[in-house]
Image (tube, rainbow, N blue to C red):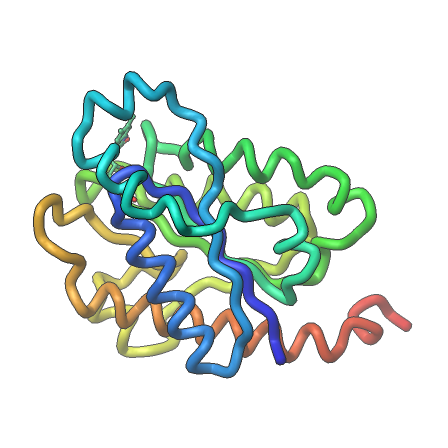
Length: 206
Ligand SMILES: Cc1cc2nc3c(=O)[nH]c(=O)nc-3n(C[C@H](O)[C@H](O)[C@H](O)COP(=O)(O)O)c2cc1C
C-alpha cells in the first residue's frame, strides 16, 4: 500500500479542513495515510487573544503531532500552511528544519511532495507561500507534484496550478470546489508516490 503523510499547520482550522480532504483523496486512491499537525510554537497569550485560534487548538488536541518518522515512513507527502506575511508559518518550517538527519541519509529524496496554502486575501500570498514551501522540496530532492490544469477540479477551484490554495472564507465553511480540488491533489500525489516508490532502484540508476 502506498503511504502518504499529510503534515500541516493551522491556527484557525482552514488548513486542517484541507488536510483532511487531501487525506480523503489519498485514501480513495488506495493510500495508507498519516495526518499530523506540527507543534504550535506561538506564545499562549497571542493564541488566547484570538478566540477562534484558541478554539481550534482545543478542538484538535487529539490530532497527533507529525513526527520525523512519518516522513521516513511515507512514500510521498503533502505539507500545508496558512500564509503568514507571504510565507509559510514558522511552526511548519520549524518542523521541516528538524529533518536534516533524514535528508543527510537520503531518506527524503525521490519521494513526491505537494503543497497547500491559504490566505486572508485573494492576492495575499497563496502562491508565494507555496513556492517558498517548495524551496525545501528542491533541497530534499523531492519531486514536486503540481496541480497543473490536469483536471476540471483545478479550474473549478480557481485555477491555481501550483497546489491547492484558497482564500479564507472567515466564518463560512470551505466551498465544496476547494475540498474537491484537495481530494484530487491527494489522489494525484498518491498515484505519483505509487509509481516512484515501485521504481526506486531505477531512479537511482541501479
Ligand atoms: C500573523 C499572521 C499573518 C498573516 N499574513 C497574511 C498575509 O500575508 N496575507 C494574507 O492574505 N493573509 C494573511 N494572514 C491570514 C491567514 O493566512 C488566513 O486567515 C489563513 O487562511 C488562516 O489559515 P488557518 O485557518 O489554517 O490557520 C495572516 C494571519 C496571521 C495570524
